[in-house]
Image (cartoon, rainbow, N blue to C red; front, side):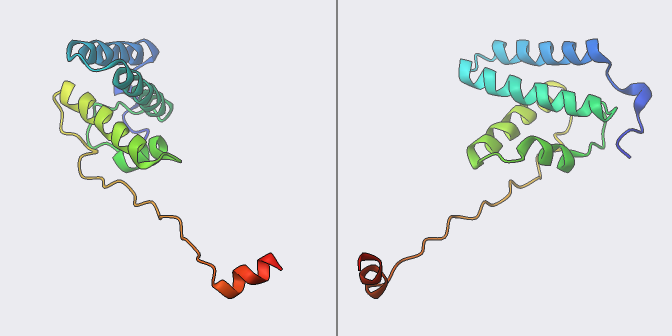
Length: 126
């Protein structure tokens, strides 16, 4: 499924052009340096992922869930929000429907707090 549009996929120089075009568009929008750096990291990983699978990220339908899992693996909620913003920017710039728009970020389980009873504290201190 993922490698079906091989003839349409961007080659190495095309991927560099896509990345450079996105970065230039972001600069024109006067994004902060931190946002530019974060967006560029996301776009670089995203475009490399798509190229490795012989998939043009501008072609639809796009395997968005697989891409989101790859990009978001091990990331915290703030990073996931930033990834979604970078991808949203890219698809808006390409004037395409954002395939990531309806993907909800995974809910991270909050760490479970375990409270010790007074008897447990006494036992630990003895």
